[in-house]
Image (tube, rainbow, N blue to C red; front, top):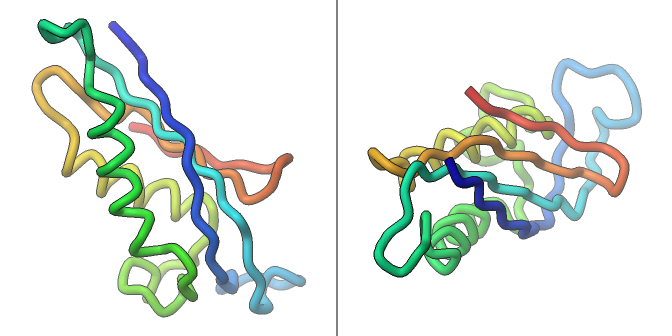
Length: 122
């Protein structure tokens, strides 16, 4: 197996719902996102998946979140836009786009600060 990773980012505001504390108030983060995929085999060029494709699909998805109020977006209408739920959302959406017989999204990690992150995998 091969594991490939990219790091990218987006900025957005949110309020945690059903939470008591400062984070229930409107605030924002510059989230860093790590996408890890696995590939069983390499193609003729020696690639599991072209980083260009991995970056493009990830950045297209992140554009739907970037500089938005996450609580107003459909994926978080009934779900608190926590780092955990953002990671799961990204995992599910990227899996729908990228998964093949050979390539699988392995894990998404969302960093809300330099010292705090949440990951989702199945």
